Amino acid sequence: MSLTDYFVRKPEFDIFPLEAADLPRAAAIHKLRFTHAWSDGELHALLVQDTVFGFVASQSNAARRIVAGFVLARVAAGEAEILTIGIDPKFARLGLGWRLMRAAIRQARDQAAEAVFLEVDETNLAAVALYRKLGFAKVGERRAYYQDVNGKKTGALVMRLDLG
Image (cartoon, rainbow, N blue to C red; front, side, top):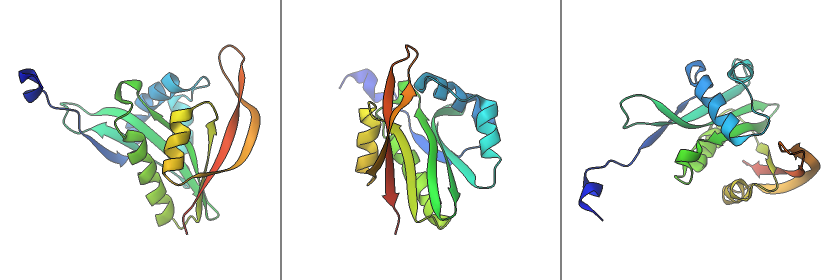
């Protein structure tokens, strides 16, 4: 450890409810992570629905609020669905995906959901590993569900976490 390491504070993050003011940054993160990104207007149209909720990971030791990641989910008829999750690549591998997912799972449980579902690109090995670590299991597959900018198609894994 160098002397300068003692004077540099590592980023600290807290998890907060997703608010309309966070949506432009959430859309920018979504654009970094997904071929078919959702705009802040599309995210807003979801967030204002009664059944939809979300969380942001925000740097707590910064002079201004820095949103490093977000998750958007919904609960209906006893089931929850992770609609989308994204972490700014600059803040990857800091455990923010884990913390955001835990917040969404906790909220789903608080809203009486019995299970949480999600879809993930089968080639996104880091995400698949995270979901498995959280207890999700594959319950289905959608072939050629996602398409990248070059037209290459990949499958989606449908995963489920039982909350009972």
